[in-house]
Length: 132
Image 1 (cartoon, rainbow, N blue to C red):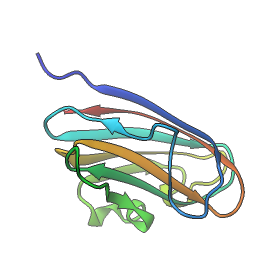
Image 2: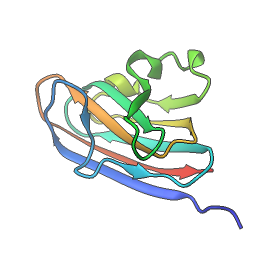
Image 3: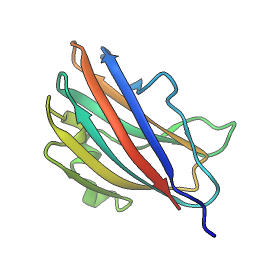
């Protein structure tokens, strides 16, 4: 019997930040052992995003490091661990747009998402699964 998928949902209805900021009040998504593939979708119902990041922590006492952020969402050929589908790039996701990605984060201990907007309020929802 394999390890079951981890299903997650992260919501931030009042993201008003001009630097990358954690999504959700409890941003960490704890992973099981083994290599992980994260598949998720992002719905933006507010202002345009000016950046979006997926970060991973290698172990419990480690610091988060960026897995993919900025224009890497647009040029995923340079990052063979990511496959992105969207109606807008994740780092510049427009209001009313939906985007998604599948990213291999390896044997990370945990992951989290961050986003940034210019100067207004936005509302985003991230839903997805983590599988081994």
